[in-house]
Image (cartoon, rainbow, N blue to C red; front, side, top):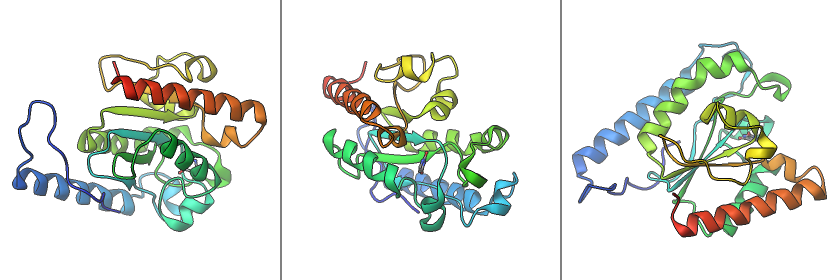
Length: 208
Ligand code: URA
């Protein structure tokens, strides 16, 4: 699915020219078509469809999840099931519009039994890198341990990293627990909500 709005000018650019926008839109369409047709790993044979993206063209914040579940596989959009509703509530709390966010997964296809497939994640990795390069978010928010490991292999364990911004040479990022954790118990819900409030304050300050 194509993102809905046009790329905004980036730092150091005075405008985003129509030809630049057209080139970016073509590159995005090419990449999305490649992902949808991909059969590079066994998940291509068991999925209903690849799940590419939802969100705006120039998201301020890119949420990176782990892998599509059954609902996402059926609908073709990331985070449309129960975890997606928790994520959407958090996005609202952060005061971000649907144009200001993007949502992707490390794995583009649902793994059977929802068991994360590390070999497939290695094969899929260039797609995530190309999505990030085209979307150029200001901030990445990882959702869960697998997404954190993909974006920041040197990060400490999930429960230590969650709720603390990580600034390195690349795009600043902020690890959150996976939203499914918030559905598991009151304790995890409290931790999720606490970390989302910390993320809101960090975004309001201007991530650095
Ligand atoms: N969990 C994820 O990590 N991604 C989805 O798209 C849905 C559930």
